[in-house]
Image 1 (cartoon, one colour):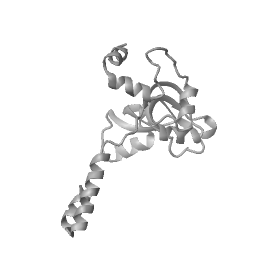
Image 2 (cartoon, helix red, strand yellow):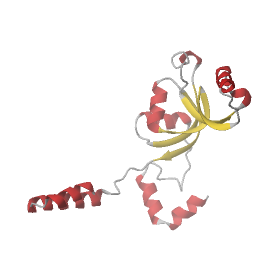
Image 3 (cartoon, rainbow, N blue to C red):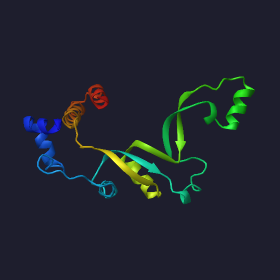
Length: 172
């Protein structure tokens, strides 16, 4: 695998892997089940995105009947258009052509969702299966040093009575 070659060559990648829960990837392979991934999401150990299949159980559809819970892009036109929309198009002399549209659906295959939304859907009784990709976020503060510097400058400007400098420093 390409990433194994990169691990051996790049010490930064090796340090990253050692600081995450995936520190033994180069030695042993563990494939997480859907249940293990979802358990990690629910208990807060996993933050990021997952690519998975989702469905709404029949008994939950009545709760969401005005608007299905999942959104996907589909090419819609012709026979997929509802009778109501056909009448509106006919009344206005509009032609119904195929176009890419955002649709609300009861089930979706391989959609990418943030783990916060995954927790919400699971709490509402939605069914997740077929997880094919997990993107784990690594939280960091890339602008921390800059923010501290600007805060110190603003304090210095305020102590010197330079309100313009303090205001500019606050905006940056």
